Image 1 (spheres, rainbow, N blue to C red):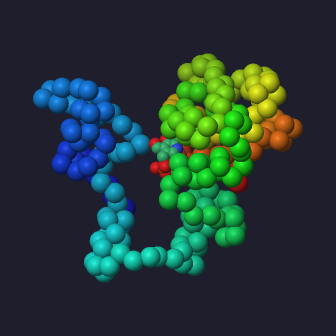
Image 2 (image 1 turned 90 degrees about the horizontal axis):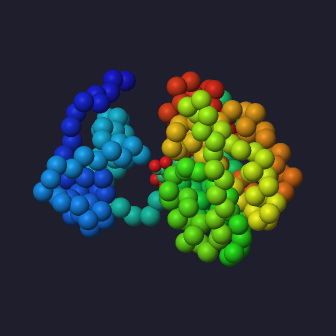
Image 3 (image 1 turned 180 degrees about the vertical axis):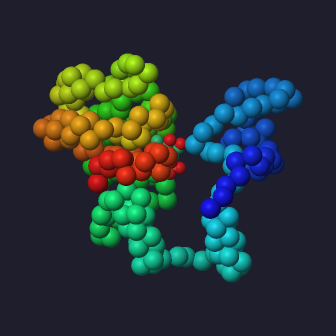
Length: 223
Ligand SMILES: Cc1ncc(COP(=O)(O)O)c(C=O)c1O
């Protein structure tokens, strides 16, 4: 399939946080009469593949937006995607629907921890992780990544000490890491697993960016 990444799409008139001047001026208190360049990455500026757009158009063409159920095909597409691109055998019964990653994260926090519990993140990290921990009245423990040879590394000694000291209940892991793009190795996953198992720490593994890894079969999932 061919993609065109050079098409410019005017999004200033849509209600999007990325380009809408009303939103940007309220949020950042900037002069909207000056040129604005938005450098978001998560919300990309290139069009989605045509078959995705066609599927959405076909669905909209029905004209009624009633309640939907999760069909066998829906589960099958997730299982097949994982097998084909990551060689991971996902069991249908392990798939739980969430509207997006952050809702899955807040559901996990509510299900597996209690108010006041400590949750650890390795920073710098995708900002909303920290917001969700604070908004759910949990205590945020920050483990700083080490920046060495132009790469981030986890300081495992400090990580374990912080877990013990703060009786950490949950680790929000980001793989590939945002920001920086580190694709954590199997040896990292093993170290994390060993420490978290030893201290009964639940792991939430956000692997939302795994499709960006050049050779997707090199990506190691926590699944
Ligand atoms: C690491 C990470 N997790 C989650 C998200 C957001 O995912 P969702 O839109 O599925 O909540 C982003 C978006 O940039 C992200 O970078």
